[in-house]
Structure formats: C-alpha cells, structure tokens
Image 1 (tube, rainbow, N blue to C red):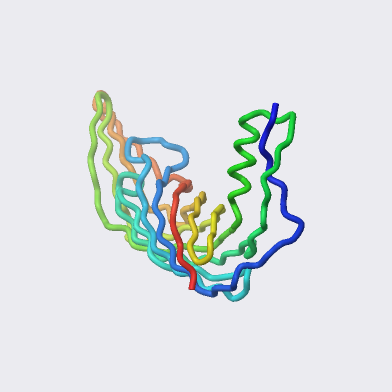
Image 2: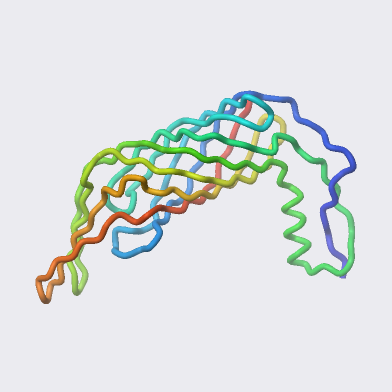
Length: 215
C-alpha cells in the first residue's frame, strides 16, 4: 500500500522574529470528578496578549471568561502565564512510502502541517459572580453556592499550531487546578430529608481553538 509520510527538510529556516502576539480563542471546560448536576461542561472565551523576549520564551496575560462555570457561577479571570515554544518552523516535504496504513498516513500528513509547539504554565486569579442555584430531580434537591468571590487556578497547557507569516491557527488543551475550593453544593434527599455537602472539584480540563496575529 502506498502511503504519505512527512520527512523533515534537510535545512531549517527561521521565521522573522515578532515579539508581540494577540490571540483570541474559545472552547470548553470540563470538571474532573463529576459528582452533581452542576458539574458540567462550560464554554470559555479568552483574549490574550503575549510578549516574547526571545524566539522561544514569553509572558502571556489577558482576559478569560467562563460561562456557567461548574453550573454555579461565571468566572472572569486574568491569566498570568510563562510560555515556551519551538519558535521556529521546520520545512517538511511529503513523499511516498510503502507499508503504512491509510490512518497512519493521514495522521502523518496532518502532523506535517504543524509548525509551532508551545507549552505554558502559570496562575489565573479571577472573580466569581456570587450566585446560588437550585435544581431538582426525582430523588434529590441540589443547591449550589459560591462561598467567596475570589478564585484562582494553577494552569498548565499545550498548544499545537500552524503559523503562516504573522497569522496562526492553534489548538490548545490544558488543566486548571483550583487553589481555592470555594464552591459548595448541598444535596437534600427528598425521601429521607437528610442533607450532605459536596465540595469544589479539584480542577478542570479545557480544550479549544484560536487564531493569532504577531507583530
């Protein structure tokens, strides 16, 4: 079977160095350890600015909005992240090889389009809109509350992107650990009247897509 594979070109080539980047992206947050009906996926939007101090290292900040975070409250955050990336594009040629499956060939083809890899780590302090909701099902009444309006997460992320000149398209995944666990959910058994409490999940996973412009 004929297959397509990506073979790195013999020489690397560097893009012009742009030390500023503006990025907008959106995606979903999903809580870990889903234990009540409030802990569902939420939509997020962020607008970020990155200052690069070298072709690889930079600092990123901006604004993040999470809609219906864990089903209890809206979150407005200020990301403060250090980023480290490849900083260079690698020319890649496509050639014909034998012995690979179609799925492997397709994976290698899309992998050949990725010319930017980035990791990030930092903190996101923010504001939780102070709300409480109630919800019923056949057996329980759930009441979710935000105990305090300050929230902060420790974040790690990985981004893969296609950068052409100044424009980039990027997919990102991340994990956001709650350093302040100030959500609470009271669960009332409608048959026995007993009440139990459940705390904030340890963290959330995120996945999203975005576009960027460097200058």
